[in-house]
Image (cartoon, rainbow, N blue to C red; front, side, top):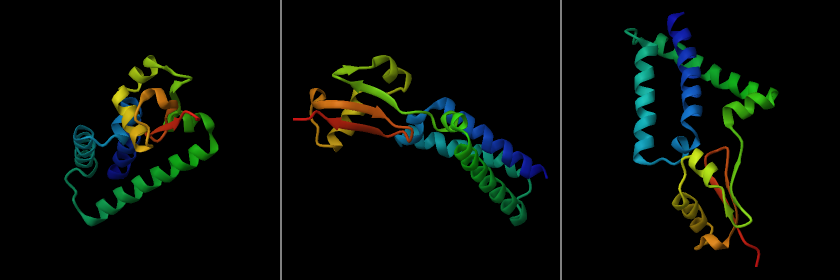
Length: 147
């Protein structure tokens, strides 16, 4: 029963930690963020499995984490408040030619991050952006000005 409870705790703890860290750390995949993710996983797995490295223990942990994931998905479908808590909400970074520096700072984004997303859409200048949105998934959506 110990590994199951530790796996449940680890799942909820990591979910809460990732929400506190924010979307950028999850989606940007810079070397720093990848090291962070691998470190989280490596550290938590040691605490979850402890000294018992048997296949049964590993299977119990995997099933428990899978069930936690299904539980979170179920709760997100049933509760808008829980969905917002876990996934967050989209954030408009720029609209009508005005940048929301306060929201960009809060999301730990720089203009260069938004411009990288803009270049992916063929937009070379900030003046050509109609709207920029930091999505719940951690991606940045940029729409060009209408010509």
